[in-house]
Image: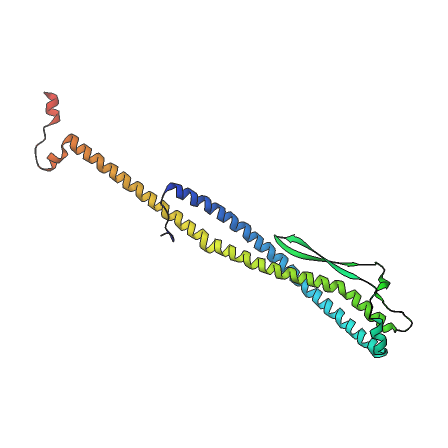
Length: 233
């Protein structure tokens, strides 16, 4: 039996059949989208793991270098050297479409392309340990931004995968079976109506034959004239 009340008409049957074809096509497209999203998501997860390990290792080295620089320099000199940076850095954020998911794209822009501008102090009053520490921090910055880009992309793609999975399940386990059940119900009703119409037509035909040839008199036990004898006369 159909799960909801439907009109057992041929027009409704045609409409549900068309709707079923569209639903099955949409189910296939959503399933392909879910599979492709899962493939790209797993690639991003592996890349995210590699980038996180790389960034954590770079930050660890930078922290060690800064600790060494602080140990070899006075605090006043170190604070003064890092007080006013000479290089200006800003971030440009964009988006790209990955399977209808808008994932971020980060790009670093600097005021000057000269790598030596990362040192905002004179080399006469500072140690080489500080130079190494500043360089190690500058080197790890692009990896940190790339890691942030990948992690945000993973979050957005995970949400889209979950939403697509719910849609696929709704089509596969609710809508498509319900439409198939409705088609079966309407088909059975139409066949039943067709059989009922045939039975009514046969009954009307029998009634007309009874009225024409007086079959009711024969059933009542009365004699019916022999048609052959009448023809011989």
